[in-house]
Structures are given as structure tokens and as C-alpha cells.
Image (tube, rainbow, N blue to C red; front, top):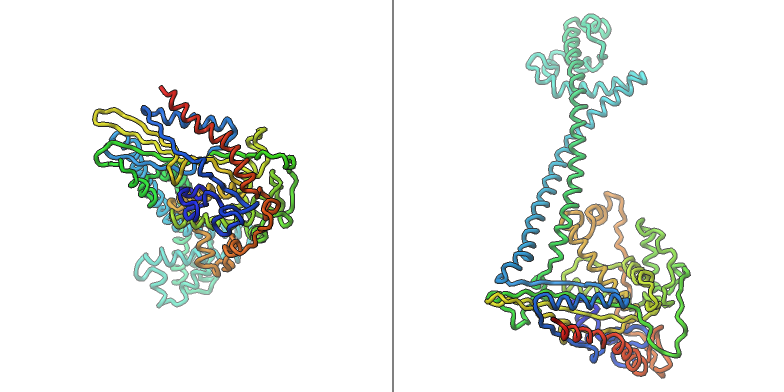
Length: 586
């Protein structure tokens, strides 16, 4: 499942993501399981549940869709993090609509990739031909240019090149005793003498007199020059015509390669979006844990999805300063971003034209507190390792992605622009994992069980998050999008493991040939786990001391006031919605 949601039955270690009460990772604060004032991701045990709704086909899904729309009305942003399906072949009708569709798409992808490969082969052959004809076109172009400028020497030089082609590829086939190459032993200077002739040297007597040749050599050279002039005229027409046709074909093949790659993208995307449980180890483990799952004997289908529903939240309190909206800009190097991130970002702006100057100044975050801190840097590294280890991701994250996540979160305040979307550093997040199980009995009767939450690992839960945790949520979505994009570009051949083929050749394989600097880029996530572990936490009078900008009084404020408010105003009504909808279902 997702990294931030973690595994709620593993509160202490957080071995499969973030701990459900954050703080048991790199450094424990004075209160076990809570980092005072620095970060909070709290899914309290008494705000976790699992809901079963047994209905006629489609009713449970309708109830859940109504819940999502209702939460949207309350200002919650909805993200679908992942989805999976599994259908037993016994359920033949549904199986053909879904799994069979995936198999059909596989065939379409194979055919499209074969078309791309064929077009590339044709393009390479045509490119080879057009390079030769382009060379010939260059000779004729230079001859015409020299003729118009009356540059006899330049015209003669390019004519000699064409004469060499004539001797090597045309005249040599005229036969023994006639071809210039074959009579050279009798007339050693015959080829050189032929090269000296001008285009108007056609009379044998004038040639013999002009160049002091013998009469017999003048006759041979006159005949060869006439044949050459006729060949040059026909050759010029042929070259111009073929070059024109080849140019059309090359342009057509080049365009077709781009179009085939563009057309195959939707098929690869749709194919990738149909996730089956058996594709990953944890998916197969979930499927095998269902004791009622008997795909060879029972017509049953399962689809699973994971959602995040979140919005900003201003905890109640009488001692807090009034909330302000900050809009001023600040210089990157003077901001409160982590030092290593600023230095790395500055280096990237120097070397990457795509982000050059983009982050010279940054806006102050709406909450007035910088959300990107050491925890974001540290957890970004853990997030990437989680996906690379568990899901075999090849993609990674860098500081540009961290800044994009910051921008995404900042824009949500402007996007919703509601009175209850206050510029607060705190957020409410509903983590919702759903299972829809559809069964068909031998009599043909179909039923649906809609399960909300998977207890105890991934229950329906309302979390209290600080804004740096929300940055990690945004980064998790960015990582998934990058992996999907890289999967598509890898399939169609634009990239290899997410890196452009051109960059691999220039930077990794032949950097000296292309004049590239072969220095490795510094790692982007430079917060060492030991730095987080060895920090000194403030432990004197926790009620009035904290090491970060967020609320630090765990027992007196977060559990007694904040979580109570979330339970009363959000979690309780959400659970009540499902109970009421299920009871009133017709």
C-alpha cells in the first residue's frame, strides 16, 4: 500500500511506511511516539474502523461515490492513490470485459511496437540513401553557384569530382579497350588528361591542339567528354528527382515514428492502469489471505482502491495568534529551506536549462511556516527506497520534485479558496481503502459486499497531519506519476529506465566523445539518518518547550483537543454517513 499510510498494525516500527503515530523512526521525542513540534502524522487507535455493506449489485459502490461527493462539498480534496482488480475466470462475462480487454491491449501494443520498429528500419535505409544523393546534390549546387559567379577554378574542381564518379561507376563498364581505366596502361596520362577538359572541349582537333595531345588521344578524349556531358545531364535530372522523393519518404517515416509512438501511449497507459493483485508480492499476499477466494470454483471479482481525502484544518485554541495569509517573495538562499536543498537546487539551475532561474525567488508558504524541512529530506529518501524495494520502481525523486510538491500543496489553498480552507500548517486526512466483492451464485443471483477499510493493517482512519507530511504525500503521488511516465517511454523506446537515450549515450557511455563532464551529480537527499538520530531533543518542561514550529503538547492539546475535534466534526459524521446510507438502502 502507500508509504504514508503505512501499516497500522505496525505502529512501533513503521517498517512498511510511516508509523501511524509518527516519531518512532529516526529519533524519539520525550513522549514515546511523538516528535515535539517538528512533525505529526497521527491516526489514533480509537478513530480506526472497518465497515461492511452487503447490498444488491452496485448499491455499495453508489453509497461510496455519494460519500466522495459529500466530502468534496465539505472542501476535501480527493486523491486516488492506487487500484487493483482480480476476477475469477468462472465469472466469464466480467472476465472478458476486463482481463480479456487487457490481453487485447497487449496485442495492440505488440503490433504498434512492431510498426515502430519497421518504420525505424525503413527510416535508417532511406537516411542512408538520402545521404548519398545529398552529396550529389551538393556537387551540382556548387557547380551552378561557381558558374553563376564565373569562378572557373571552383567549377572545374567540382566537375572533376563528378568525372571521378563517371570514371569509377559508369565508364568502367563500357568494356575492355574502351574504358579509360583499362586503356591507362597504354596511355598512362589519359585519366589526368580527361580531367583537364572543359565542358565545351568536344572537337578532337581542337583538343589535340589546345592541350598538345596526339590526334588519336584527342579523338578518344572527345568521345569520352561527349558521353560524360550526356551522362551528367541525365544524372543531374535523376539525382534531383530521387532526392525529392527520398526527402518526402524520409519526412513521412520520421513523422510516422512519432505518430506510432504517440498512438501507442494510450494503450500502454490503459494496460498499466489495469493492475491485477498477482502483479506484486503484497497483492498476491492480500489475495491469498481471503479464505473465501476460490477462483477455480466460484464466480467472484474483487476490486480494491486506496483514497486520500484531505483539507487544511485549524485546531481550536484560545492562545494562538490570528492566521495570516503570506504572499511576499523571498530569495532562495535566504529562505528557510534546508541548506543542502538550497545548494543543490542552485547547482541544478546552473546546469539545467529547464529550471534555470525558476527558483531564484520563492513565495512564502501560506501558513507562514516553511513546510520543506529536514524531515521532508529524510523521509523522501525512505519513500524512494520503499517503492524501489517493494514495488521494484526504477524512478527516483530529486530536489526539483520536492519543490514541485511544495508548489502543488501551496496551489491547493488558491484552488479551493474556501472560508474553511484556512492557511494552516495542519491538515485532516481520511485514509480510505476499499474492497468491492461481487459474487455470482450457480442460480445466477449476484450480490455485492463493499468493504471500507482493511482492519487492522489499513483501516478507515482520520489522521492529523502537519504540512511536512502533506509534502511527503505529494511526493508519493509525483513518484508514482514519474514511474508511470517512465514505464510508457521505456516501452516505446524514448528512454531506458526513465533516462533519455541521448543522455545515456552522451553522459554514461561516451562522455569524452561528446565533450560532457563525467562527474557524478551530488545526491539530492543529503539528510543522513544519523543526523536525525543524534539530534538533541528538548526535554525540559515539555509543556512550554519545543524543537519545531508545530504543536508540541501531545497529551494536553493534540489528544485532548485536536483529535477530539476531528473525531466529533469529521470522523464521527463520516462513519455515521455509511451507517445511515446502509440502513436506508432500498
